[in-house]
Image (tube, rainbow, N blue to C red):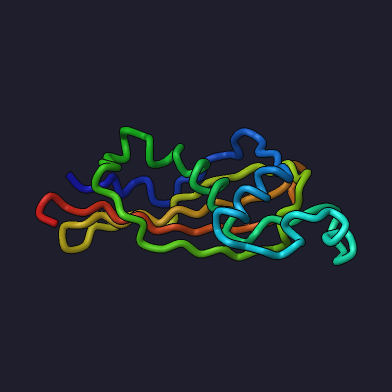
Length: 149
């Protein structure tokens, strides 16, 4: 059964606050092989003009993927997550994520399509501070393989 196309255009208000921590940044940097001292050394980050260590650019994945669960877990959408592959992911960074940031994410369903028996779900996560400063726009495409795929 195809996804519910009426989800296109839906928006969800910001959810819980995600506090960016030094340990999480270091762990993520280790996992992705990011070796810059800006991810580990507060003094190096301050010397570079940041308030604290900064997260690698793809750190936004942690926040955006957690946030879009509000959409993918909605039974009314009709998404069988066992059939999902990640089609694409893009980030537009407005500034680096810094240890100590308190971030919230508003989620938007930009598109729902069915093509050749497969469902395509485009979801955008607008990540910003509690005070409303834009930090990152993360856009992802999820593809739910059709029954015959």
